Length: 261
Image 1 (spheres, helix red, strand yellow):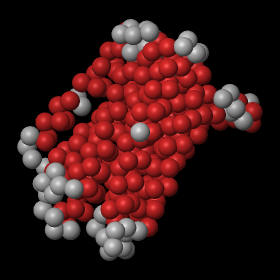
Image 2 (cartoon, rainbow, N blue to C red; image 1 turned 90 degrees about the vertical axis):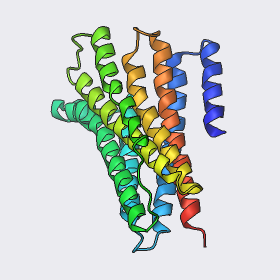
Image 3 (spheres, one colour; image 1 turned 180 degrees about the horizontal axis):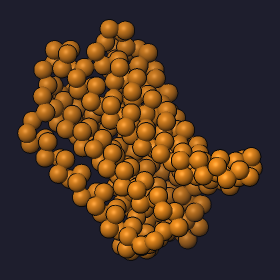
Image 4 (cartoon, rainbow, N blue to C red; image 1 turned 45 degrees about the vertical axis):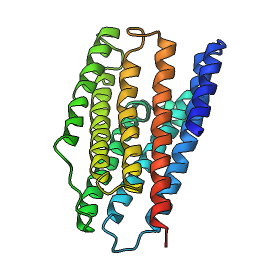
């Protein structure tokens, strides 16, 4: 319901010719709030696990990933609001680190989430549940391969020689890692369907989050090629909103599951 309400409001504002940058900023702020809630819920779920729980280390990695994600979003928020501290802007090295280096926090966050997903599968196996990915579930990775290729092709068509020389590399890496995270979560969800119940919903939601994250880079690279820039920007932020809501759903379901007596 939260996801649908925000999506509808953003669409209405866009159709009313509200400045796209304002719509994106409002949706971005809502996204950060939801990501903070997902982080808090993930930490609560981890604390509810016994120290000898096989999936506790996985929960730790997921908490780290969501925490890094929030830190990266706060950096981006400062840029959107033109509130970057002057002490950073006045020093070229600090400015380069802030604008070009810290964006890789997003990739670090995705890698931590990937580690958490891999550890979750291992932990569930150690717990004796006996789930295994099926060969047909692994076909989902075939859908991941075109994502970074699409990002590269679209980005090269929009701006063959961008002023930010590292943006293509960043988007390629982020789309690749995000796609792998999403694909792995979907595979894990398929395996968890063998158990039924909450685990399939948890990893299904995480899979939706990962795929939305990867597709957001395709939307960003599609500006002024496949669709108008304003529409692609809002689509990108909408996919990131989906990412945040899906992780909130996954962490909330996990917390509810582990705190049951």
